[in-house]
Image 1 (spheres, rainbow, N blue to C red):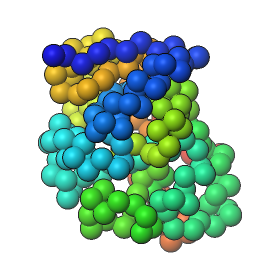
Image 2 (cartoon, rainbow, N blue to C red):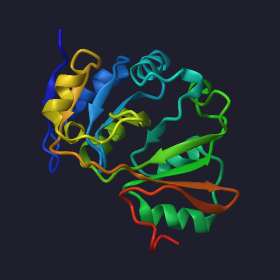
Image 3 (spheres, rainbow, N blue to C red):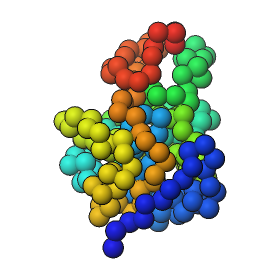
Image 4 (cartoon, one colour):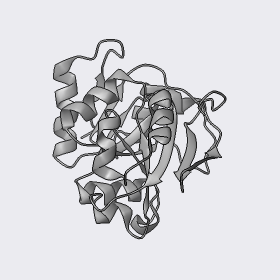
Length: 210
């Protein structure tokens, strides 16, 4: 049976619909959702079997997965990263919520199945009310990846929820239609050893960040 295509107003998300999405995540399901960049696909960080399924969908061995996590706000940082300096925090506060992924040092609270041998973690706080409310009500981050594979070109269907649904309806538990997505990915910035390094240029400008 195909999964539902759930319409949610991106300006004023319906609480009942948000609870439905949260319920799917808590039950170990995989959902597709809008962000401020491309549509994302993800699962609850505390559901290892869902993460294994997500890796299969992306054709990536679990030990080689390099997913980021979506947080509701910067208050989640202390739960999953080592302490950061005030100058770095000021940059994060300026950039987030926004179309950026920050690579930070992970702490011991990050589930081992998520990290494997990695010691870093990618943090996203998208400027999108739907996914922000989902993560807020879930109470912890979701493991996230873009719906396209890295070797794929960002074709038009990746921005069109109805076409995303047709492609994934037999592979995930829920697809959220939150309007057209963006065809540009987030800007990835490494914040290791106290310095910033742009790993990938994306939608987020770094011109005035630091």
